[in-house]
Amino acid sequence: MLLLTVSCGQKHKAKGLVEDFIEANALDPDAIADRDFTRFDSTKVITDSLVMAMQQAKHPLYKHPITYSIHNAGRMLFLLRMNYRHQGDTLWQTFYIDEQMEHVVAFK
Image (cartoon, rainbow, N blue to C red; front, side):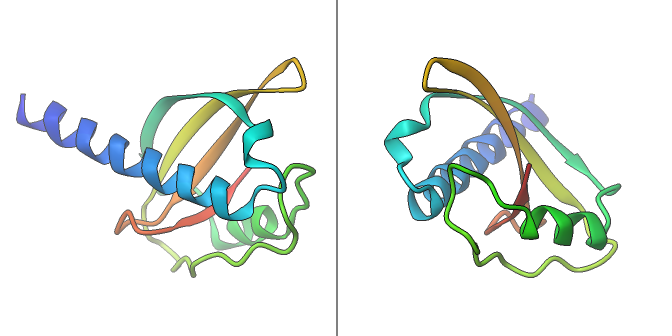
């Protein structure tokens, strides 16, 4: 029961970080509508080179370049998947959050 409560709290915090990230970096945050946050998990399989590739990618709904926090090699990342609507299409993105749950470090 305690583990479930901690996980729900972490998901809630991750959702807030992603919402703040979108507000700060989206060209038009209101165009990313009907946000639904689903999968919340952790991973250690995302390498620094993958993080850098995601950070350098241009996303049509976001400013470029985006300033991210630094991700240290070998560290765990949390991931949060967001489903949303944009111009009538249902789309999704996965956001990667640092181990301290303080910053979005990348998304795809």
